[in-house]
Image 1 (cartoon, helix red, strand yellow):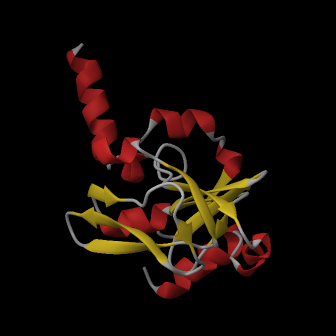
Image 2: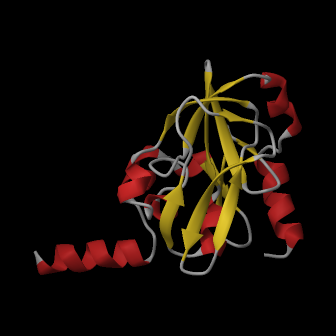
Amino acid sequence: MALRMWASSTANALRLSSAFKTSLSPAAFSLSRCFSSVLEGLKYASSHEWVKHEGPVAIIGITDHAQDHLGEVVFVELPEPGSAVSQGGSFGAVESVKATSDINSPISGEIVEVNSKLSESPGLINSSPYEEGWMIKVKPSSPSELESLMGPKEYTKFCEEEGH
């Protein structure tokens, strides 16, 4: 039992998530020089948010790169469902031990769901930024906006050139 607790606390300290490791095969992501994961199948904004478009809904969160630079997330402010977001506009904030940062929407649309788990467990953004740590689900009003976002290779290069 003590060994299991030690392993769990060590995994948390290292920001390892068993849900993340089991749901994504190694082929599903690539690593940049800063060791932040960048997933295939997502689109990325220069402000370090990601979008996963699934049918009529797009899921939005912050990237592994962003959470890594923020440090331990201690509070998340999200909007109410039914609110409108516009591409590049702020829809909430993330407070970490280092700073508070606005979160910008990579696309325009209507928020249909928010991740209520984040109010009780904001650290999900650190431990699982692409899975459990998603922030909002949006019904896109202009799906063509996705075309203006970066793919995984472009985003990895962007992060490397940014000097982080």
